[in-house]
Length: 181
Image (cartoon, rainbow, N blue to C red; front, side):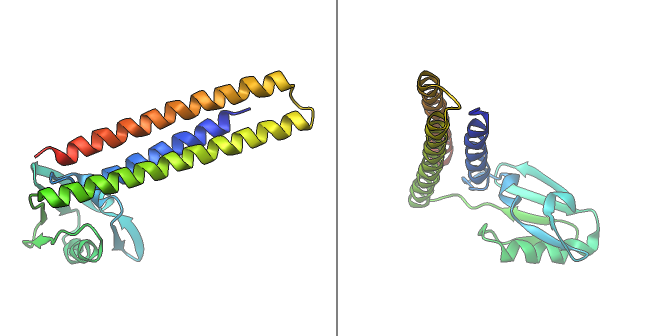
C-alpha cells in the first residue's frame, strides 16, 4: 500500500546523488559531464556516448571522440555548459584541467550541497504528507481500520526517518569530499 511512497523517497535520494555527482570538488570527476549533451547528427547525445572519457590524473579529464570530426562539437558543448572549465583541444583529444579550489569556493560549494540536501529532505517530507493523507482517506472510506492506519503511518514515519538519515549522510560525505584538500 505504501510501497509507491517509498519508491518516491528513493527517487528523491537518487536525484540528490546525481546532483552531487555533477558538483566538481577540485578533483576530476567524469560525472560533471553527465548533463553536457553534444549535437550528434542532429540528436543531443551525452559525451560518454560519443567518445572515451578518462581521468589520467586527479585534476584532469581527457575526452577522446570516436569520430575526430566531433572534436569541435564536443569543445563547443563544454564551453556552452555551466561546468566552468575551458576545454583544451589538441586536434586528437580534449583535455579539461580542473583548477585547485580556493577555500572560499569550497565553502560556497558546501553551502550549495547543504541547500540541495535540504530540498531533498523537503521532498521526502512532502511524500510523507501525501502518504499520510492517502492513509487518512483510506480509513475514512472504510478501506482500512483505524489501527491499520496508525500502523501504516508509523511505517511511513520510519521510512521517512530512514531517508532523512541517508540524505544527511550524503550531505556529510559530499561536504567532507569538497573540504578535503
